[in-house]
Image 1 (cartoon, rainbow over the protein chains, first blue to last red):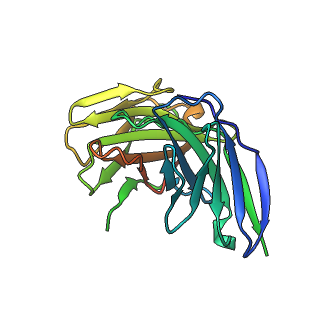
Image 2 (cartoon, rainbow over the protein chains, first blue to last red):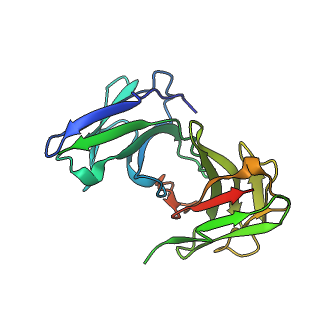
Length: 111
Length: 114
């Protein structure tokens, strides 16, 4: 699976959009980009995933560049409850489902 | 409600005393997995199971055993716990068919080995 690079930490003002970047320059054509988050010491929570096209759900939007070498997770209106560690994972969507979690980005939403 | 349930949530034990952390899911998922999380090391996979009676090692399997006798349960066994197994443990499950990529995690089990 391709390696990902994320900034270790970011701040965002409450109510503003939080844009979390992820670099995955060695991504292969059949690898998806997944985003999870972990609030404090709770179990990680799935947010969104995509292959090529931009994706949106009730939690967030995922923007993948045309060359697929980077992506951005967007939380449109961050709240204090969005303070968490966000993990970007790149992997093939096969049956093995082995997810490798890196250090992620610690997002702090400030009042 | 769809959920992954782990027990115990907190445990303090002593070196060498066998213990089992249970994991149960009610979503009829084929795939289940155990992770441990340590400061500075992130989440690391211990073992995983693709289906009943099918298990395989993850990245850090030493000192652990698992079994998958039923689809819903995937216990993690520490035969002779040592202090370096003090950690936060997470069980996760996923369907193996739709490949949605969504792993469902339990709330975690914090284990301290003295």
